[in-house]
Amino acid sequence: MSFETISVIGLGYIGLPTAAMFAAYGKNVIGVDVNQHAVNTINRGEIHIVEPDLDAIVHKAVTDGKLKAVLTPEPADAFLIAVPTPFLPIEKKSDIPQPDLKYIQAAAKAIAVVLKKGDLVILESTSPVGATEKMAEWLSEYRTDLTFPKTHNEESDIRIAHCPERVLPGHVVRELVENDRVIGGLTTKCSEQAVELYKTFVQGDCVVTNARTAEMAKLTENSCRDVQIAFANELSIICDKLDIDVWELISLANRHPRINILQPGPGVGGHCIAVDPWFIVSKTPEQARLIHTARKVNDSKPEWVVEKVKLAIAEHLIENPNKTAKEISIACLGLAFKADIDDLRESPALNITEAVGAMHTGLLMAVEPNIEQLPSSLHSFAALQQLEPALIKADIVVVLVEHKEFKGISIAKNVKLIDMKGIV
Ligand code: SAJ
Image 1 (cartoon, rainbow, N blue to C red):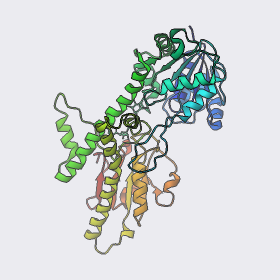
Image 2: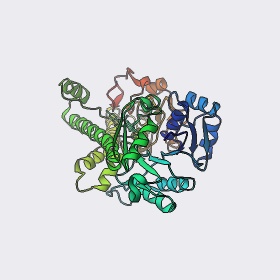
Image 3: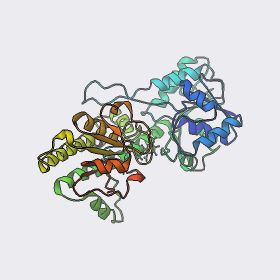
Image 4: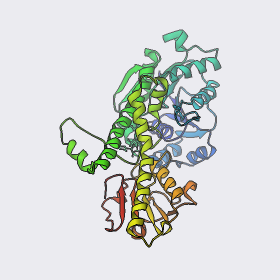
């Protein structure tokens, strides 16, 4: 089977780079997205997301006529689904968030209309175990005239696999090509076809397993990182109590040949590591005790940072009895969910800045070199400020993200420093 036309459903942080890569390697690619703005932007040869080097690849693919974006699916030989897998709204704080597969279901419904015998459907979205089988079930309900692996095994009309994306935001273009891929087909032939498809541009190994193991592999990778970051975050809280510099401690411990502790911070952000472990916990709440605890440790870190800021305000007032809280200026350095990106979604740094803004009556300066405008949630609390003037004005400096611009800054002696990334 050779795949000439490939359709990618969902043109976000994963779907668009994947679509562009197939197009760059000579395939005809139809990108599908429900967002008219995204579709228009891509068809102009531009991109609506921030990812280094992607703009040039998309521009060339569109100019060469290899990539186009549309609102509704058209026939293709292979369909890759890269839509979000969020949570259902949680009712109580103690509840375990449950995955919401509505976008996968909507994508399945949309492509079902144009599916034909011999097509391959790949789920790329990070998903709870069983989601690929569920997607196959939906497709079989929408297209009762076609056969699927569950009932027809290797003889099915439609092949289905799960191939989770594993690329690091900011390095997507390189990692898409170089990373190994886990390929979990519903049957052996499904896997073989998916390997053939990805080998279009993947230089890493394409390792074959079943769909459930592929789903769990992706969740395991991000949960492993979450647990390790929770360990570092817990250490930082312990060290704070014991008056030990956690950064020095970790660098000493990491000199042991078999120890590699990650870095503590203000919490875990982004749409992957703070989300994916819940897919395991919600499926197996009794068994996933460590993974659940790690989530809670990382999720509670922002509150701990806000408490530190409250304490710093109280100390500053004791040291400066003529001052009122209203006269204290605070600078929060960094709003993004990690270093050197502009992505503020699910960012603990942003949450902390919002919480400080809500409780502090004096000046709050947000320093974020990667954005030009503050998010609306901060409009009434904070001013976007350049680094230098913020450092001159601030009585309290809170370092939340290790952006390159912040490394090596010096803080005046009388200024209170809360350095969550150990860079000052
Ligand atoms: N963080 C720490 N300490 C560390 C490392 C990270 O606090 O030592 C924090 C970051 O500041 C950030 C969060 O964790 O808030 C996540 O950042 P990250 O760089 O570790 O990961 P993501 O979310 O950008 O991308 C992850 C990657 N997964 C792994 O490294 C196992 C990526 O390969 C996945 O493709 C991506 O999730 C995804 O899409 O699932």
